Amino acid sequence: MSASSPHPYIPNTDEDRRAMLDRIGVRSVDELFADIPAKFRIDGLDLPSALPELDLTREMSELASQNTVAGNGVASFLGGGAYRHFIPSTVGHIISRSEYYTAYTPYQPEISQGTLQTMFELQSMVCELIGMEVANAGMYDGASALAEACLMACRVSGRHRIAVHTSVNPAWLAAVRLYARGPGITVDITDGGGLTDEHACLAVQQPAFLGDLIDVWTLGEATRAAGALYIAAVDPVSLGMLTPPGEYGADIAVAEGQSLGWPVNFGGPWLGLFTCREQYIRQMPGRIVGRTSDLEGRTGYVLTLQTREQHIRRERATSNICTSQQLVGLAATVYLSTVGKQGLRQIAGRCYHKVHYAASLIDGLDGYSVDLEKPFFKEFVVRCPRAPAEINRRLLERGIIGGLDVAEQVENGMLVCVTEMNTREEIERLAEGLREAGRG
Image (cartoon, rainbow, N blue to C red; front, side, top):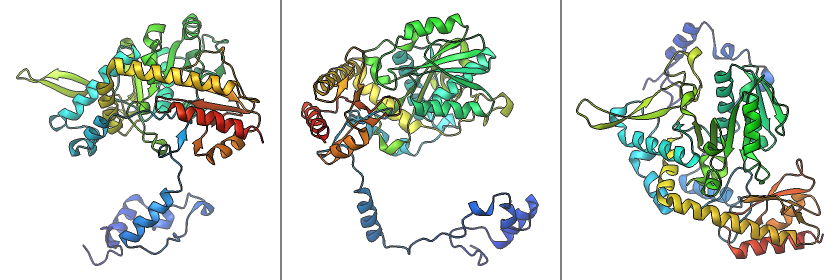
């Protein structure tokens, strides 16, 4: 390393930096960042002194202990898009193998056959699960998958308005709006009516963000009557029990794959599942793995129909997705292979029965109400006698992570989620905790 480098771990010398600045036509690093207003620049970092590894480990452990997480006596009923499901030990064992956990986008198929095969198997299982004809190898997450689906519908139809049903998660809606802002596409919110020949698609969520099951058949008929594409966002675990999108006429279907063998993990990384009808495959974003054979007739796997801008001219790209979620995708592949069709059906059934037991208990509490007339899968809204934030604070004191505060959507509303991970004792603890919190 050159002695003229002032930083021991940054190999660029003063001469290197000068050459780079000269090449791009600026005199200094300060001039390079001159377009950023001074108030947004950081003049140095006030970092504490370095610690020995033992002390650093101790400090980080103390910080981590401030988090309240499910397990070890803490019950969680938090959902709203992130779900705690059982993860078979096979998942951790396989994804911890070094040949997988260091894998990235398999640009060189000749040395990535194992990774490519698992991606192909995931695509195959996702098609079967969602009831669609083709799937890609994964997107960033469910929200970005939905946004990409809406843009894809605009390309297919040539229209420039997007209709999003009120059933869609507000966070996912925000992603759709963000993606639509650049190309100047209008986003309309609807309860299913008002579709016109200007709309490229209608995007719905089943089950809805607030837990109830919507009439996806009637909405599909209204979408087709307007000549638009029908997009469904689904909970993949629910498909162990509910009708898949392919059977109620969806043209594009997406899902958040986190539930399939991946922990909530403080918000990511996650896995967007993306499927569509075969006729739209050339407008599908992301990557597709295909199975082929070599000159000697041996089975091989390759990336095909790569429509992202790293592989083709930018103006022809359908997406600029630039990273690979393959480690999470591998977890989903192992999960689905482990639990199988019957296992997924059993998991969905346990979620359904446990959540309805919880709803019946809570609806019987003074001051609380649940609309038991609406069908729901694993989440439901509780109307609380006071602000959900206060209720949740009281629950946390009892070692219970309560439901999601949805008071913006429903007055004093709390979205409660129950999965196969919640025991009968935990559900009854929740009901008792709500009873006590409701007394003031």
